[in-house]
Amino acid sequence: MTFNGTWKVDRSENYDKFMEQMGINIMKRKLAEHDNLKVTIEQTGDKFHITESSTFRTKDIDFTLGVQFDYSLADGTEVSGSWEMEGDVLKGKFTRKDNSKVLTTTRALVGGEFVQTYNYEGVDAKRIFKKQ
Figure (cartoon, helix red, strand yellow):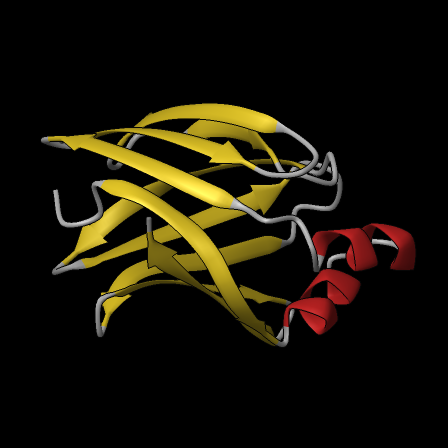
């Protein structure tokens, strides 16, 4: 329940290079830099309801820890995978449906901030959110 609340993106590290590695074109990358992403998380036991709200879309995601589900990234890339809780860290592993390559991500609270990390094909990125 540590993650419960609404979190707004404050800053990103290496996010453009990560998106480039994902194959996202320059126009979409430039737009994503200013997406004003807000993530609202509601956890009940091992079930999560997340609302991702940005300048471009609002998406609701429901998942249960350890259970595979399908998801569409903001650029339209389709993935399938699951989240696991390891200590106080949410760890996600998702496989792209178009090329079978793996995207890993983590979500953790660090110094009162919500930090999401990404790794795809050797490129790491981070987005840091502040509680609203």
